[in-house]
Amino acid sequence: MPHFRKFASIVAPAIALVFAALFTPATGAQQGDTEIMANLAAGRVAICVAREAIIVGTSSKDVETGSRGPIVVQLDAAHLAVMMGAVEWMRPGTQLPPVRLETMLAEVGGVLSHPLKSIELEKDEAGDIEQLGIAFLEKLRSVTSQIHHPLDLKPDEPLVTILLADFAKDYGPEVWVLTYRVKQHLLQDDFYDTQAQRPAFTQLYPPEKKDPNTIVEFRYPEEKSVETLAAMLGENDPRLVPVRSDPKVAKAAQFILDGASNKADPAAAAEFMKGALTATSDKNQQLSLAVLYEDDRFNWVIEPKDAAAPPPKRDSDAPTLRKPHGMN
Image (cartoon, rainbow, N blue to C red; front, side, top):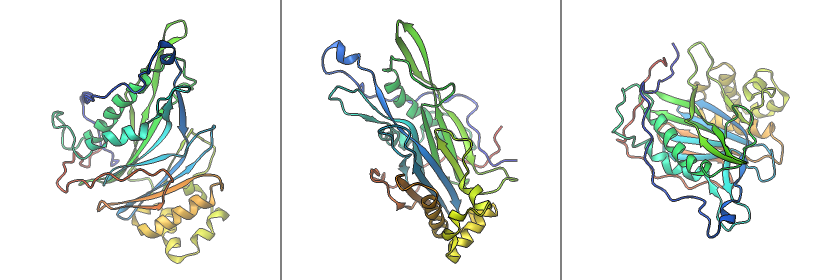
């Protein structure tokens, strides 16, 4: 049976969030009719669960002018998020500052260490992850509700994707993908109603018992034909050979190759990830590499230029809603 956790059998109610309108025009209807534009965060995310640590690496992909690499957000001492998709919103031609969704995500991160007690959950349900997803949905809707022009999205293409890596008490390391899509309805002429949908939750780690413990990789936009770091390692890609020249790094790489990355030394595994990302990325691509430790330590190996300040350390007795359980 897989080690996945399940969500509550009832839909958790949306968390009430009070905030001002983000794009209130200063004066005049003409300014209010300005289309909202968005900058994308695109690239790949590679996550390696080593011994008592989760290593999260990113590499940017230049998909359009103004695009950024995947954005790493430390939500609290035990949770690390990576955001991709339409992450920065603005109204061209106005004096209004851009809205950055990673700031919104950081603002709702507190539900992970202090989940709402008003929601009745069984002890084995992933209520904290669900609450984070719904809390961010309410923030996201404050932006998408003001989009009244058609969005150029492919069918089922997400507007925003969040990868969440964390250590769960009495459960262990895990990786989730939260996917946010939108629906549009034509009201009149070219005026659309845009509604962000409830996120889809997919657990990527831990794997099923029969599957290997290896590097988890995700790309935005999705690219099906590219090789993953795990595949390159298995094929003895020449770009990775110099990375394994150090005996300690080679040992960590062998654990990853054998499907036992959770036994690898975290420092050596981080050095392998750093070398592998550097060797398989172009010089103009922006990289980041962070290590989240089981004892609530956090460390940048490659710090991005716009890294946010870390959140305060969580209380040692902060509640948790995780327990190991098979997903129905």
